[in-house]
Image (tube, rainbow, N blue to C red):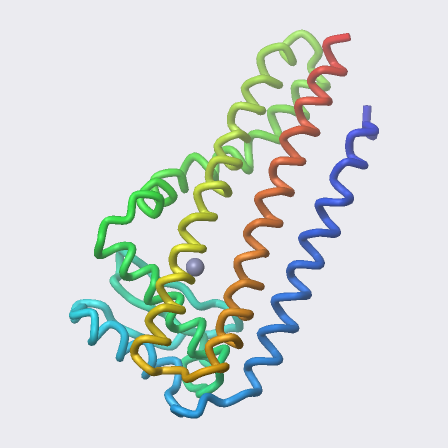
Length: 228
Ligand SMILES: [Zn+2]
């Protein structure tokens, strides 16, 4: 059984993920070219937010690559891609503030963030071994009765991870948008640009989660077909 009809189920998911990625790239590019009136770089935005929030043990540093921006809770470091670090664009301000949103989650012990971090080992296991167990189960016959459900259970951890990621990302963006407005980093309609960048980014997480759900449904359909 090299091809199962249920693979067709993944196509709308792939289209959605592709569309979401295109959308975030286009939005990001557009607002990367619009400088903010305040003229602060991404690095300055991050440092100002951390400073105003009274957080002095987190560093802000540049990192190579594009869209590589992240907060590393173990190193207590906000890492901004070089472009974001040095740029005074609306997109740079939005991304820098979003990463500071994750710092605030860490400082305030935001539960979904801790849950997400705790799930990482299970996700690595589930994403790699779940599909392998399912495929092996399909070929081994008798053992499939054990392998396939086990593979599905492992892959379910991946789904939980993607679902927990959603509140973490939405919350970080909400905190970011509130801060760049309140601290006067962006003014007036500039805030709309920042919102569009962060909304487009958030949608990629929704698309990825939906795709993972479709994958799980597909595995379950294969398993059900096996039983007949
Ligand atoms: Zn984030």
